[in-house]
Amino acid sequence: MPGAARGSVHVLGAGIVGICTALSLLEKGFDVELIDRNDPASGASHGNAGVISPWSCVPQSMPGLWKQVPGWLIDREGPLSVRLSHAPRMLPWLLRFLRAGGADRLPAIADAMNALNRPNVELYRQHLKGTGQEGLLRDAAYVHVFRNPANADLDALGWRMRLDRGVPLERIDGNTLREIEPEIAPDYQAAIVIRDQARATDPGALGRALMDKALRMGARFRRAEIRGLRRDGSEWRIDTTGDAITSTCTVVSMGAWSARLLAPLGLTLPLEAERGYHLMFANPGIAVNNSVMDVEGKFVASSMRDGLRCAGTAEFAGLDAPPDYRRAEVFRRMAKRLFPRLDTETVTPWMGVRPSFPDSLPAIGAVPGAAGLFVAFGHCHYGLGMAPNTGRILAGLIAGEPLNLDLAPYDIGRFA
Image 1 (cartoon, one colour):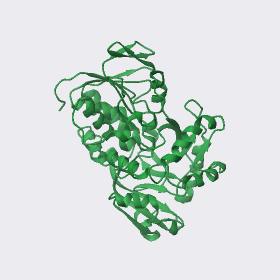
Image 2 (tube, helix red, strand yellow):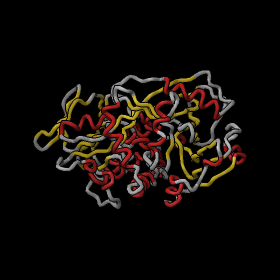
Image 3 (cartoon, rainbow, N blue to C red):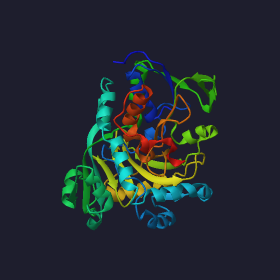
Image 4 (tube, rainbow, N blue to C red):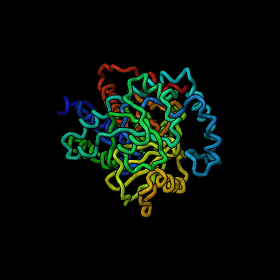
């Protein structure tokens, strides 16, 4: 049940992070209004691979990664693409990204990722309770598959980082792999399996179910494009395509668009619009039991209510560039290699924008020197997984409750 009545909070952005933040605020008795130009949970919150891992603790930038970048860039079907027009603007972010992957920085980043991810499967179950949509979340493993068994090496740095943090995983051979996932091709000879995870069978429907719950709990949703945010006396003025809104407490949770909104307030943030693609196979003819990562191809495959989804790639082209759906079409061939019996005839491509900071950590908390202004964005590849705990942390912070978590790794001022 909601707590005692408190003040009002405006949440800017109705993606999965904003929705989970709204739910946690409502549980504490706040009056909540969400504002977005689009339908709730319709952007990156909808198009992801559906992985919900309490064990994600390995950042995107790792030692030696730079050696692979040139090869990825010249491979038209590779996992990384940078549009030439955007490359000069991206360079400062890239340098920060490479520095974040230094061996001296990895332990702190991994611990911060671990702390933010660990409770989220259970938090999702709590949020879904009573919605009638509990089946949108299923228990699953995360199966990382390898064609060359020598590459399934638990002594590699990323796997050692997981083992050091208690991640339940094991290495299996190809025969055992096909007992778990019978549709995987025989030339995949080994896998590393992370246990005790979950997956969303329809990430967009998951977000909508939670939004519906928030509305039933008293939240309001306003469809409007947010044009600006500025201080107006003791309040915040939110300029929209409709009426201007005044707010005593505002949460910026607009994903990749958040930095653009905050820039006029003097906040210069290294937030990149990292574009990801998926290809949905509408009539796959097969079922995948878990989330499957093709480690070589850098994509994830998962069975969903509407078909089989393959998602991945990183494209850097800025916020406003049109999609290049050739980036999604590469999954047709790659998925067929992974699943030989897959029917690839009927497909639907999609593109969405991930908000990525160089260190793979989001910005969560109060904005220094801006009373009543809070942030929750920049979750990189992990927005779906990190959303419930992000919302819980932020709601507790706004309520003035003591937190048993060091927020310094997520401080928006860490890039100053």
